Image (cartoon, rainbow, N blue to C red):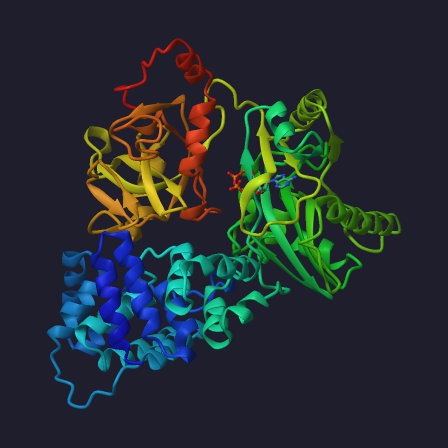
Length: 608
Ligand code: ATP
């Protein structure tokens, strides 16, 4: 397949600001891809070489990429750097430099997708001493044979700057349209994706074996399963009602979610975003390796603890584990407890379709084994336990248990349906999170995506004065704005945000962003931050749930404030959804009162 075929479509994808057009372009590209390349083209569209969980990063520094560009074009480094600064985009700098190439290349070899992909694979694999020069050589080798517009996308990909902003769910839609007779079949593809977290693999099974092959896909060890997620409600009564009067109440710990895979002594740990974070938790690896099951997939929450008192500590304490070096010291200084709450696989047996109670029983048996082997000190599994749980059938018991959990340092409770299977990748009412207060004021935080920014003035000159935040609507795969936030940032945060957002800058509003406000700078929807607000109000300026509550109005946050927490464990599509904001709005007591009295004072009060 000619590399220029995908380059031309990438170009069109970048230019469009219409979501339907983006999907059509993906379909066109998928249809023009030969079977044997389908997985590779899928990964390239997502700006990667392999599924995300494999952690294979090209991540070439700009400097190194520009060096290759300078060598290949014959234009000196200083001028190439100037082009980069002027154009503000490494791809465009490449296009310009290659079109002004000093040495005419007489015999060019054709660039194919196969060749580009395999060269990039080599670049990604090179490690250690001397690897920098070799990487530059490989990149030059491609650039030498590249047309300027082809070079543009080579440099974008190697520097991790290919920003087509294609969501996994858009790709699933496009795959269904391209290779099955109906978009309806997306649910079959989605099931396979939820079990494997690998879109390239699903696409390959589809083109070679059709829908039957996709239906036959099963979970596998060391391939992360997309996590089951919870909905929220405002009261114990409501939770109980949703659960049909009887349910399990588990402690909701405030730590990091881990999905742990084990085969014999080999252990791998995946984060909530399915990144491989095994190296952050050598103690958890040891503990799980010592468990007697040969094959295992379990989920749990790692929580920092005070070793003397065994009390749970806040989530922030776990941040010390996110480091490359000195992890052994961090492990001693910031010990954790690992509280398992689910089991997905054990010794050849899939557990995800079993009801909750049965999974819990299997987990209890497993952990009681761990506890008895602790007493003989045969393994160091003392950090592993099972999350505390109580079967409840009245609201009072839920509230009492919640009080106990909060007193012990938890965020609240997770209420779970006793009969529900583990629904990979789904957010639903089979799990409900019940936090301290969901009542009148907005006690809960929201996780919103940064889609734009406004230049700062005065003290904030040269940095962003406010960020434009959006919620996500999965139905149409679009981000809808819900507030401008400018408070809660320290000076350090302001510096940091400017730098962190830099790689995501795009020239126009992203095709998947719906906004009535015109930001000074637009970003690819990537970064998620946590905000708190005093309430949700109707607003004619924001597009979140536009026309849902009142014609011409959306829902906005009033007095939003950054909590200081960047949710890098969440992808943009994991942000608080438009539906969640609508239900939070409906829950506000104030709104109920207004509906009763007919007073509607919210209109026109801007929630920026
Ligand atoms: P999301 O609901 O999207 O995962 P979130 O961080 O906004 O993200 P939370 O309010 O933190 O949602 O609730 C869900 C998270 O709670 C889980 O992903 C998990 O990390 C954590 N958790 C703590 N205790 C439990 C438990 N007993 N069962 C399941 N999850 C738990």
